[in-house]
Length: 75
Image 1: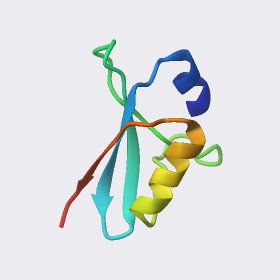
Image 2 (image 1 turned 90 degrees about the vertical axis):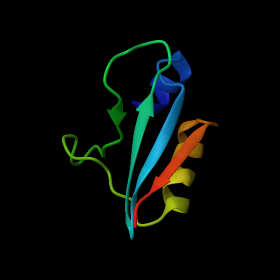
Image 3 (image 1 turned 60 degrees about the vertical axis):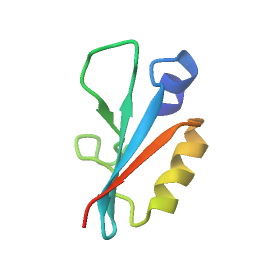
Image 4 (image 1 turned 45 degrees about the vertical axis):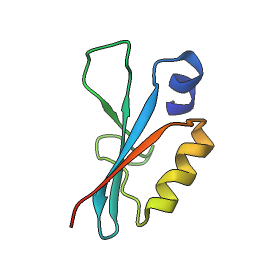
């Protein structure tokens, strides 16, 4: 579903947020003032998908087809 939103232009960029093995991905769209979307898994569609590393989150974004990502880490 996220891949379709990227193809249609509904998603422009993504932001990876988190720290110490708990990173999540939020999608943004510069054409809309709606809330940002958070990536979830098909098995748990109402909970954000959590990645153990920033590298894993970036790999998922590349698989989806996004080329612009912002990373925010907290200590």
